[in-house]
Length: 254
Image (cartoon, rainbow, N blue to C red):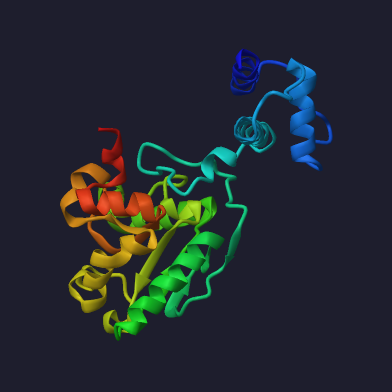
């Protein structure tokens, strides 16, 4: 048991031998061989402990090989203070498979988000409502162009209330979606929040893993104006927790 704990500590700190060269081709075999070569025979370690060792090793290995791995979790916080690298692009972007608005642009989203969004759109349709996808993933360069456009039009102070500086938009994560509806003429307007579709989203989005990221009563915390059209995928568990407790992501640390 002490030997196992020492192995886990070694893997957590990442301060000993480098992983075998063939770990990417044979992760399970490579993991066990690496552990056994480092700390000896693990024949007395049960399967549950082996799984823990494997999971931790793969996590640290991925971090060491992919500098962007840290930014991929669905619960990552991106806001005015916390941004993404300019060259970060989600690895699993696909073209959305839901109905899009005539004004739609940037129609790529992450694969898991697309699956959840299809379920959400289908549920809305069963309730007699039609939703449209408006915008998904935005690259750093697109953010930069949009932000400068709004600064030129409205000034920096006003632009900062609704537009993210480059690298600080949730859209770069591939986890944020702007939605609208035919009843809103495909526009992103506050009135969408008072529509049947907007009210339904506010009450039900969490059951599909989404939150209304910028509520009207949290502008002082999020730093952004009310955006009833802006959905953020965080998974059903966290979305439900935030909804039931009336919180936004910034309040999780408090």
